[in-house]
Image (cartoon, rainbow, N blue to C red; front, side, top):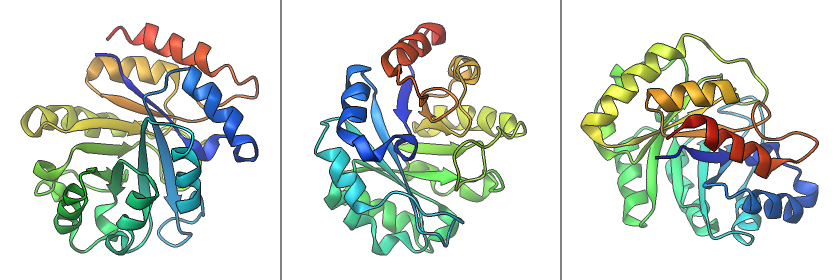
Length: 219
């Protein structure tokens, strides 16, 4: 299987979204990754409902909403109604994670948890049977362009083992360079969020870069 390649839309040029989306569609990306930040759960503010609506109007492909916000249970319907197909929750931001995931499934959408670097996998054991995806953060959330946290190797190795039991897919988010995408794809990671390390450059050669990534992964 080829890796799932997901451009991080907070890195694109929203002043010319139609052109950006046309280039990404030409590059045959697999899904769009939307970071939703409220300035409270993480020290930054990013995309919102209107941004997802704008992206949805320009594509039929899957859109995920990575909710880096406080109390997401009260807001997941906003993002589903805006056009999101996958909702990621941070377990530490929500008191009743399983209940919220069940609600997302009732809305006929997919759900997953996003795991910050300092969150233990053991503490999330009860959640895995309910997850379609696990979004493993390999940088601290909130800002693009951060350095990869090398100690995440052990966490990813453990997640690859767990997915054989629970059937979720693993998406890696943070400093996903071409070299890391090749290495972790071979290790069993299913997909990668692409930001400034692998995709978004001033030359906008999105198709060329994605073709190269698919070629080197060998899956």
